[in-house]
Length: 266
View 1 (spheres, rainbow, N blue to C red):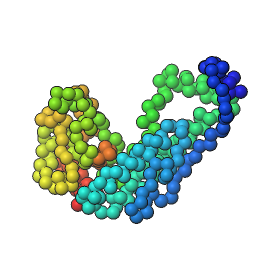
View 2: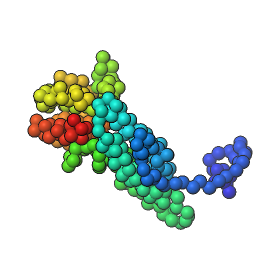
View 3: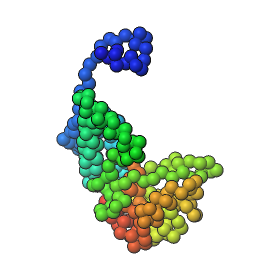
View 4: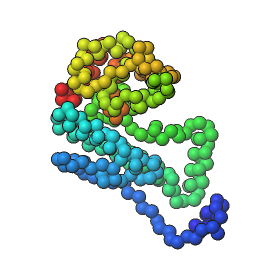
């Protein structure tokens, strides 16, 4: 039967089928992400259905989330709650993705041929009409808990990645700045809001950068457009490039900075 299916795509005389097996996927999450100095990540902590292609991605997000917290705990003697936030942030995120993967599996794995034909016809029509979401990132949630500014609509979203000129060469910003906390500003004035707290920011490990006038030259207007659309002129960004909180004014800077300092145990 497999040869009948493959016959329309490949020369079945060019290979020999040795064995076939039914693949059974798992959708599981462990109960405890941390025990003292031991942390679990990736497949050791959760098993993800393959239908969104997010199993490896989920493990990479685990590593990215945990790595900067371990580094910070060692270099800045940060309190234990920072390490506890690993589970607080990753559990709801990966739970959502696993459930979404299961839902996609029900669509992809339809066993009734007539229902599958109806599915294909419906999805094809939606695609041709431009009504179908095809960007996989649209199905990936933001952070909703943990080390993010409470009540900020930008908090927990992924920061954009602008292309800049550096030493006469076009580069991505992450290729130039360190993977540390960043205070992004889009102009000289919004950068000046941090002047009074410059030493305190340095002690927190926050690097100040400007993308725009008096700073890195942006090749396009990606970051500026992002800031304008979200009503901010600056933002605090985590080492894993999730936005901690947006900043729209000097008073807003003070509130966001104070919240970050409290989160980091300063």
